[in-house]
Image: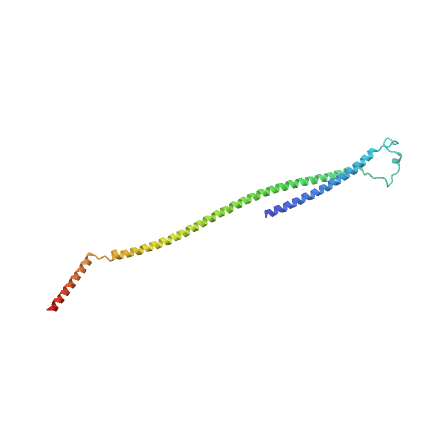
Amino acid sequence: EATELREAESQENMKTIAEATEGKDSVQTALTVLKTFYEGAAFVQRKFVPTNSDREGNTVADKAPEVFDSEYKGSQESSKGIVGLLEVILTDFDRTISTVTEEEGESAEAFATFKSENEADTNSKEESVGMKEDEVANIESDLVELADSKTSAEESHKQALDELSKLHSMCVAGEETYEERVAKRQKEIEALKDAHDMLENWQS
């Protein structure tokens, strides 16, 4: 949006400068034509001084009534007002061109600074976002590894418990006490005695 506004402002400034330059050229041309015309007329009026003239330089012909086919050289008094007005207009055009050109330069410089700072800030934020995304990815990877390690540890723990249970059955639960061994031995002896008695009774 800022770029669009800057482009629109620049186009408007360029249009104003172009129009002012065109107007200045037109006024300059008009001034040249008018100065040439009026200065030429004044030169003609100053150049010829008839010999048979009075103190004011007028001859009999000069004092005769004016005719319409005489050459018109323009009013010198009027020329001063017209030329002066055109010179004021010319100055205004110059001022407009100078002012708008200066403003355009300042605006372009300010926009360039703004754009540079904005791009730098954007790049910094994008870099920061990229770093944070990398950190998140690393954390997620660590969590996956921890989960795998936990599963592996749980399986190892279960296997250890199973092995311990087997060892308990073999080494602890399966071991007879002294009293149990004596009683078992006594039963075996009695069983042998019974068998012996049965054999003797059978032979007799």
